[in-house]
Length: 116
Length: 113
Image 1 (tube, chains in turn blue, orange):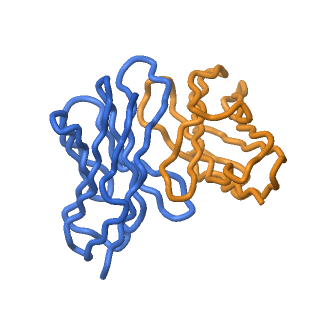
Image 2 (cartoon, rainbow over the protein chains, first blue to last red):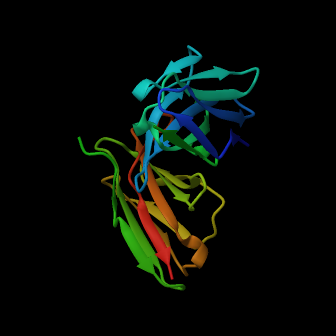
């Protein structure tokens, strides 16, 4: 079984400040890890993914995340927040390899607020 | 290129009714998954279909069913609607099983009165 825990349901930062959204996962097999962003009344947009290879992955809009197996973490960061980053962010895990049947397991989400 | 499209965008039903939600995957994508997102929570996996066959089912009652058509579009059906079925229903597609990532549509907002 797989699970995801996002620490902090709400995070508030000032424009220009560092964004750090925390995600810890549990998986009995090597994981694929994802961060998605959801704007109001919209679906999910992929920010970045980790499947294999380099553990530091870069995504869209200046976001990046680092896969740390020893800590079972996949925290999302952005050096400088922008007002347009205000949204809800979801961390998700899927099992790696083979014909994975496509079940993404999501965390509860973190709402990011950016203050001017 | 068009993304994943879902219809309708909003729907209001009453308890006991049934509903059909539709999804058209990205052109060339053969795998479709359905998720339920209750307000304030992360999406929960309902079904995955690949080449018209059910390949995975989440922890949902038998009132929920789905199918995939030869053109790879999909329908999600929910019978005997309950108030708790009120949610955003998301469809996601990908080219083949094992491909990552999944691409999501904007969802259908279902409200049960």
